[in-house]
Structure formats: C-alpha cells, structure tokens
Length: 302
Ligand code: PDD
Image (cartoon, rainbow, N blue to C red; front, top):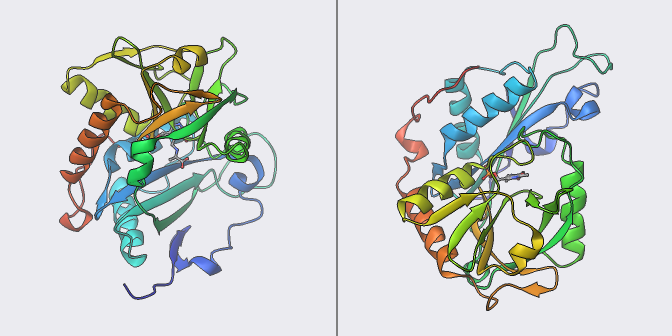
C-alpha cells in the first residue's frame, strides 16, 4: 500500500493527523475529562459490532447529559470515511465526544456544543502465539470511581494500573474491589473457567464496562451450550481456575496463563478459550463489510 498521510476528523473537518492540534484549551474534555469514547475494531474491512458500539456511545452520552454530536447516519459515514482515508482494513477507529468548550467552571455550561474527534489506525491482529501461550496479568486495587459502566475518557486510574502491569512485564492489570473480587481489567473484561467447566464473569453492574466483546462472548458461550455464571470472583478463585482470559474489541479472547506469580492450569490457552476465540473470529467474518453500505440503525437515541 502506498504511504498515506493520516487523517483525523476534528470537530467538523477532516484534517491531517499531524496538524490536528486545534482542540480548544477550554474544551471540557481537556480540563475535566468531561467526555466519552468508543473503540471499534476493524477486521478485514468490517467495523466489528458498529451498532452496539454506537448504542453504548449513546448510553454514555445520555448518562452524562452530553448531547449527541450528530445523527447516527452521518456519524456512520464519518467512521467509514476515516477508515477509508487512512487505508485501514485491519485496525481500529477511535471516537471521542466531549461536552464542548466553555469558560472553566465545574457545573455544566448553559450552552455548549459537543466536540467530536475521530481517528483510525491500522493494527495487527492479536499474535497467534499470544492466543496460544496466553499472557500474564497482575492484580491491583481498583481505584476507579463508582460509574465504570460509563465509557468516560477519565482513565487515569486505568492508565496507572496498565503502567504498573507493563512495568511488571504483564499484559493487563486485573482490578480488585474492596470485597476482594475482580472487577475487570484496565481496558478489558475478566473471565475464568472453573475446574468444573463453568464460564464466570462479573455481571454488568456499575463497577465494570459492559464490553461489546463480553456480550458477544456470552451469546457464543450459551450457543455452544457452556454453563455461564455472571457473578464476581476473587483473585484466589481465578488463580485456581482451569482457564482465565480477558476480552476487548482488539484482543478478542486473550488467554491469561499467569496471574501475579501463579501459573494458570498448565500455562497454555485452555480449550474453552480457544473455542470461544474461534467462534468469535468466525462470527466477525460474517459481519457486513463497510463497503456494503451503512449497517441498520439499531436503537440509536441521540
Ligand atoms: N477498552 N473494560 C474496560 C475498562 C475497557 O476500557 C474496555 C475496552 C472493555 C472492553 O470493552 P469492549 O469489549 O467493548 O472493547 C472493558 C478499549 C478497547 C480501550 O479503552 O482502548
């Protein structure tokens, strides 16, 4: 592919990525992290689960009383155009909406126009070796706020946790609540398979983000006849599990083969993780391509 310059959508215009520094200094996203975002994976020219992502965006905006920046169809066109202009066939689109620009004061401004930024980048698939050998996670106290169900750009606690994981040579941090239960990862949902073969993940309460990948996995698991339990689990239970994995849009089903210093089972990806991963990939391959036009509206409520 010829070298392409990167293009971003910034508040109403397509601009060169390198020149895209013109968000206002009093944008509330910048000053208060007063905004929300989505990351949508692109696989083989397909926007994976575009509608559920846009529905979740609408939910996050609604929870913070931020107006939708535009109707859904023009937004869907921008997602495609950004992917096309950046030549992204495998990768992701990132989309962020802040409350807008206003003189700094904590309470909402009387009138602010939401500001949207969209970027896209190519990214390799999760490496087959990782999906086979799995990755390590470290457990850390969950220091986030009480509304982790909102996909807010206020990610400082997640950033610190991921940095600590990275410094420890781990791929993810599993966050532990005050009751000793794992909530989720720094940027993923957490799962285990118990010794008697039950798939366990925390229910989608306010302590976690209800991952779009999580929902797909729950559906696939029940289609495959797996026994599924949505309940909290402790790190100790996770360390004794038959399998563990985390999920998000870009890592799909990522086997976890070490938690802190404990190797999980035989230290390789387990059979349920593998079969869920295969089912997830097969499902992605059946989704419509961006080139086929806009996917149906779903229940968008701007
Ligand atoms: N993060 N939990 C958290 C805290 C997340 O940040 C994410 C996704 C998920 C998984 O959600 P999904 O399956 O819809 O990707 C769970 C994205 C990828 C990010 O921040 O980059």
